[in-house]
Length: 270
Image (cartoon, rainbow, N blue to C red; front, top):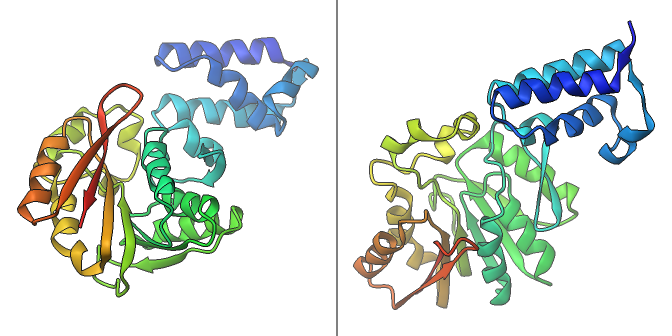
C-alpha cells in the first residue's frame, strides 16, 4: 500500500480538527513518526506502512486528550529541553516568569520545592553561575525524570525525596516553588489535556492554598537572613497568598504579573 504524505496529513488534520485540536500538530506528529524534522517533511512524498501505523497511534492518543508533550516526550522551557512523561507536569511558559525573577536576584543557594520535572531548579543551575541548587519532591517517579533532565542539561542539582521540608536540613538564600494550587472543586473543570497530568501535582486542596500555607509555615527555619520565597500562583490567588504571608509574619510581599496582566508570582521576604 502506498501512503501518500498528502493523504496521511489529511487524515491527521481531519481527526485533530474533529477534536478541536490545532491541525498544525498533524505535521509535527507525522515528522515524529517518520523520525525526521518537520522542516524535512517537505522532502518526502510517501511514508511506510510502519510509519503510518505509528502516526495513527499518535493521532489517536492526541485525540483522546493526551498532551502533545507527553507523546513527543519532551518540552522546551527557558530555551532548554526537558524530558516529560505522565509522572510530571508539563513545563509552562508562565513559569518562566518565576525563573527570571529568581535569576535577577542571583542567589548562591536555592531550594526548589515541589520540583516535578526539575525545570525550575535546572534552569536556575544553568543560568546562575556558581549557584548551589537543591530540589525536593515527594514523588519518586518525578524525581527520576528530574535527575535525567539534570544530566541532559549538564547541571548539578541535589535532589531530595521529601514531603515538603520533611527531609530538608539546610538553609537557603531563596526558596522557589510552583506548588499544586488548583482548587479541588475546579479539577473536574480543567481542560481534557490538563486532566491527563498527575493529579497530585495539581490538587491544592479545597481552597487551593494548602501548599502555600504549609510552605510558609515552615520556610523561615530554612531561610538565611534576608532570604526570600518566590511562588508561582493562580491568577486569582494573590490576595489569599499575601494574607497567608502576613499570618506568618513575613516582612514584605511583592506581586509580579504575567504577559496577560494576571498576578503570577509572589515574592515573600522573610
